[in-house]
View 1 (tube, rainbow, N blue to C red):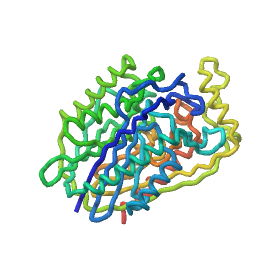
View 2: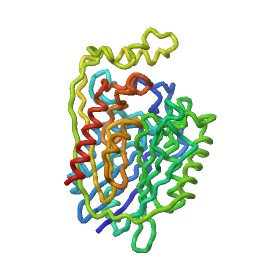
View 3: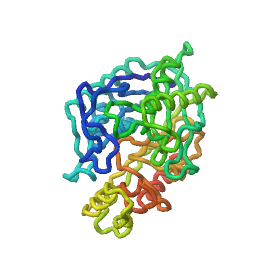
View 4: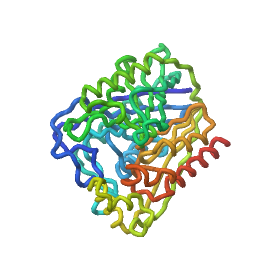
Length: 411
C-alpha cells in the first residue's frame, strides 16, 4: 500500500541578511550589501511516502546549498523524534542564488571546516522542518501515483556549449487520493535557477520557485521540486535580461510546456530498496600539478577573481573528501541523491547504468562538494576551475554510483 502527504512552510527571512550566490570565495560575497525585501517566498516543502510500511522523507529548501553538519543534525533529529530511518531522509536545496547566505563548506572556509552562519534564522528553519514532518505524519493518506515526463525546449540548455547536451526532462509524479484529488506532486528539473544576478538584492526562489508556484496553483496542491544535473545547465543563452519579469516569463513558459503536454500514466510504487554509496579520499591541491586553472594565471584576459580562486586552491595543503549518495529504487523509479553539482556528461554516464523505467538525480542533496566534472571536460570550463575536486575524482565517484546501482538492481 502506498501513502503520501506533503507540507509547505514559508522560510523567507524576516530580517535583512547577506545573499548567497555569485561568488567564488564564499567568505567574500560579490553582492555588495544585504537583502532589502523579497520578490517571492522561500519555501520548505516536505513530502512523506510510505511504501508498505516503510517511510521515505523528502525535504526541499530554497537554499543555494545544504552542508553535511546541518543535514546530519536535521536527519538524526527527525529519525529520533519520528522513527524514520536516517538513510530514508533526503534534505536538498533548490540551488536558488537569491537565498540567504547561511553556509560555508569547509573547503572555502578560512578555518578549513564547515561553518553555519545565521544560526538564529536556521533554528527557525529547523523548527519549521520539524513542524512540516509532524504535518505529513498527521495527514498521511492512501494514494495512487501517476508519472509524466515533459521535454522542455527554448528556455535553458548547456551553458558552456550552446548546442551541447543537457537533460531537458521535467519529471512529475502526482499523488491522487481515493477521491481522485491530487494531494501533492514530486517534480525534478535540471537547470540553474540563476536568472536574477548579483545586482538583485531581494530574496527569491528564482526560476524554480516560479515554476513550482505556477504548477502548484494549477493543481491546487503543493509541489516538491528538486534540481538534477544542473551543473552546466542554465538559461544563459536564452535570456535577454536578468529582471524578475524574465523570471515570470520563463517560469510561465516552462510551466505551460509541462501543463499543455501533460500525459501521465499510473505507476506502482509498491516496493523499495535503499543503498548508501560513500567514498573517502585525501587530496593535496598544493601538490597537484594538474590543478584546474593553473594555465590561466598568466592570462591577462582572465578575470582576477578566477585567478584568486586558483591561487587559494594552490595554498590548501589537504582536503578530505567524504562523499555520500543514496540510491532509492521505488517501484519503476530510481532516485539518486548527489552531494553537489553534477554536470550533464557525468549524469548521463550514471543514468546509463540504470535499467529502471525512470531515473532522476536529486542534486544539492545532504551535502555540497561543488562541481563534479569528468576528465574529458576537466580544466576546460568555469566549473572545474572553481571546484575543489581533483582530476579523476568525479569519474571515480560516478563509477562507484553506477556499480552500486547495478548491484542493487540485480538483487
